[in-house]
Amino acid sequence: MYTLLRGGRRFLTTAVLSLSSFCLSFSAAALDRIEMQDGSVVLGTVQDADGGKVKIDTAFAGTLEIDQSTIVAMTVESDLVLQMDDGNVLETPRLEVAEEQLALPQATEQSYALRQLTRINPEPWELGNGFKFGGLASFGYNSQRGNTDTDELDYRFETRWESLVDRYRVEAFGEVNEANGTKNAENWTARARYDRNQTGNWYWGGGASAEQDLFADLDLRTSIGPYVGRKFFTDDVFALEAETGLAYITEDFVSAEDREYLGSTWDVHMHSNYLGGDSRLYIDHKGIWNLDEASNIVLNTTFGLAFPLLYGIEASAELAYDVNTGAVEGTEKVDQTYRIRLGYSW
View 1 (tube, one colour):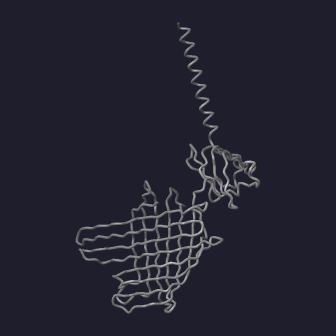
View 2: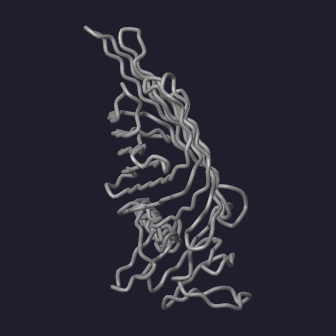
View 3: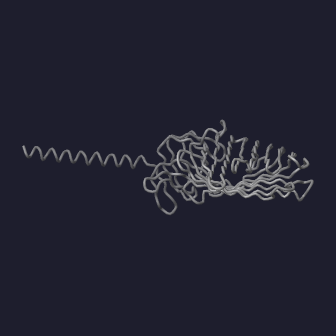
């Protein structure tokens, strides 16, 4: 009886060890593999290739981004859609890279190097189907009670639809402030723009805007006109986009004399995730120069830092610095505002 029990234990132990070994070997075999020029090997699950980098999820270091130029061999064990730099889209049940060359199904007549791979499993809009939709809605509120009761509310909404051919952008923002129940600031701005993509990251477009700031004597400023722009840098570490154009501008004031003129306009937008953790440093700068009166310039600049919280919710801190050299008499030419915002991005 003792011999039978001991034999049973030995059999059970052997079976468990064999099953564990099989599971471990199966798990290792199912992992994707990247070999680099320095001989190091990374195991994990390849998620994407974009901007010259391959993203792979690992168990030991989270998501890694590996420069495609440093990869000499790669194996991906899943069905893939590959987008190449010549516009071709290929489907493959398994991806092999050997000596920096893609091993593709025999049905594919052309050969490709790894450096020619632009995306793995691209989104439909990247293949010319539909639009990429995104945006942000945020607000900030500050209330103080004491010798002076103050309530400050600012809000912002922006959305965009982007395809391979064109882009639509809409934004609206403003603020309302009160002190002891009396308003001491009330302004809003709304803008809409359409861009048409050209070669080399260039684009042209047209836009219209409306703006009101009653405490700066501005009942309504409208602007409409064309512009040309370029995306100079598009990496997440540093992205820079700038536009310049002409616009017909009208300014209706509450008490001062109304104005209308041809203006030179420009927009600059920069952002970076240099600080890591999906944070975002950004600068937005907009300008209008009155070509009929060279000393009249309107500048709006925002410096900000945003960081994600959870489920698309983000917090941000901003400094807004506005200059209007053509401000009417009795109003300030410079306005500086600090904001703390809470918003939702999609």
